Amino acid sequence: MLRKIGRYCILLREAKQCGGRVAWVIAGVWLLTPFVMQMVLHPSDAIRFQDWLQGQAIPQYFDGQMLMAGELAAIMAVAGLGVILLTALVVLYRRAQFAVTLWPVAGVLVGLIGNAMWWVGEGSFDLTGALVGLLPLALTLIGEEVCERLSQDFVFGPGVRPRLS
Image (cartoon, rainbow, N blue to C red):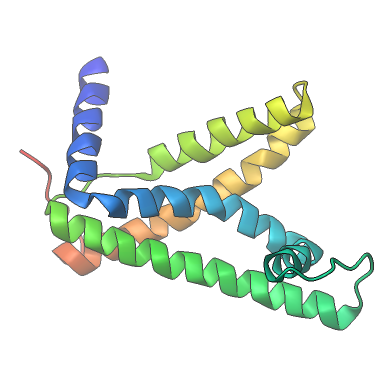
């Protein structure tokens, strides 16, 4: 088991070296995904964020039209992150010329570190909050797995997964 973990770590290191800055883009998408998914669930957060970015006053109340616009903006942000992730994975696999499974790293980064940040921010462990934190983890892992398969099929051909020897 330790040998497999060590081999996986070597593959990750090689992929990161081949990818360069693209690896940081992929990690950034993983970290942004839970926040954007939160905005899909709560479109008022998307409106507040957009107003804050533009330096406008943040409204206290939202009408239906504003919430619909926030929902559409959040859905477009999810789609944009998906396109960025897919493009970054294609570039990574083209540079590396071997396939490596990245969803476990996304799971650790989003699930463990994200929930730990929530725990520290709250000041105490909250089981309900930890379970709610698993929803963005699940969505991130599903999106990562879909993008991984599509990008590997695009770069190597359907069903072909070359490994580093």
